[in-house]
Length: 317
Image 1 (tube, one colour):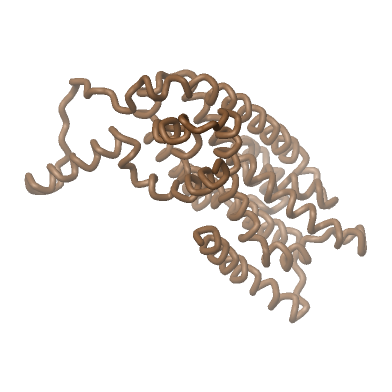
Image 2 (image 1 turned 90 degrees about the vertical axis):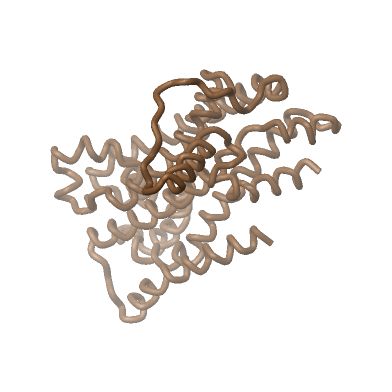
């Protein structure tokens, strides 16, 4: 039921994105190279951001917690089975987002992105190139989040990781939205080749995968060559890093989950209380902030992880 609701939402958004393309095709409108690059970058950046946000919202579903161990531990379920179930559930929602967001828009808009040098073959080439690009962009952001989370799990004691987890989750969430809404528009040839923009382009993943699409589509401009190279390097590094981090995390931390509490006792330090008006509002604000930072079970993100939890249990059972 929940998967169907997600699919309906993403498909509806994809249909809205596809309507302008249908109107352009009906009137025989053609896009210039800069306009095509702008549209390509929009779809790549949107897919990357939506998949990243879903992954961040499923933050607490990546690694097993004490409930998984207590519920599934007595059952004849191997650790490898639990590991595969977790990973499958984690990738289910981002995969659904990639397919749903591009089910209509990914069919209509690539008609305007086809390379004019390949004729009919170029038109057939653009669809798989587009699908591979958005899938690679989504896979990159998912694996990057997993790699960072896995490194933190392996380097920090479990209780300290749980304290840091809320900050990492909020940081990723803010970073994704900030990049999506605040990154500059550099889709023109002049902006892509300007020496002053090269350092900025090196830190914007959406432009890396825009270059990857140009490479796969056969419409490579020389300015996209270093961007496509960064996309391949980033994708390979994130996949390798997340795989190693997850393997180490699962088979290293699972025996320690039941032995160690999730919450550490409070440490006395600098006393600070937010001023939210009167004493009652300040007390409520302080209680909410401390609860969010103290226990992962009370974070605002926990409700979004129910989808992954349901998928994981259905896989195992």
